[in-house]
Structure formats: structure tokens, C-alpha cells
View (tube, rainbow, N blue to C red):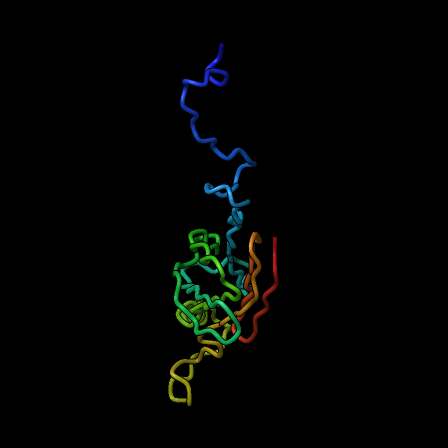
Length: 162
């Protein structure tokens, strides 16, 4: 006679058996966590090279009217990539990447003989036309967003990469 057949053996509560990710209390499947991830890189199209040492700030919000919240910061490496941006928190609907390009562009202008010289006496603090670039985009759970910045002293372009 087995324990299941023996009336003297106390019954043990059954553990809900279900697919991985099922809720522990047996009420149904738990919502699987599908984090959003973000990466970027910068290519300086005026010199045909990656832009190293550019500061990048990542901010998030949970809806179109929600306030922005700073979530992480990094800088581009020698290949122009930010590999260590943190994943946005759950319920993030929008991400903002802010690239602090002024120091990089100032250094590049001084290094290039044919580049326009900084006009420090003018209405701006430096001769850099774009002191920063801010990109805002919508995100969905479970997606990875690679958002490259193609940069030059008087223009930029972004796109969703892979």
C-alpha cells in the first residue's frame, strides 16, 4: 500500500504545478518580466570616426504627462559606444538620451585646421552650434532599442538600429 492509499498518512498540500512563470499562489500565470534595454553609439561623420568620451544621460518616464526621472549616465568608449546604460525600469513608456556633445565638438574644432573657429565673443558660450542633443523615443516591454547618433558640427541624425 502506498502513502497515497494509506488513510493513516496525512495528506500534504499539493504544490501548484504549472508552466514556468506561473504565480506561486496558484491564481494563474504571473506576468513575465520583459525588460526594455537601450544602447547607443556616436559616429562623427565629419571625420568618419567614432566619437569617444561623450557623456550620455538616460532619463525615463511612465507616460506622456509624467515627469522625467534621471536613471543612469555613461560616456562613449573608444568605439563611440555606450555599453553600460542601465535597463529602464518596468512601466517605462518613454526614454530620453541626452548627449553632451559640446566638449567633444569643441575639441574636434580645435583639432581640425579647416573647421570653423569658436566665436567666444558671440551670443553663445562657445562656437559649438549644438551643445547637446536630446533624443526622446517611445518604448515597449521586451524590446531592445539601439539608437545611434550620427553627428557633425552643424547637424545630426538618429535612427533605430539593431
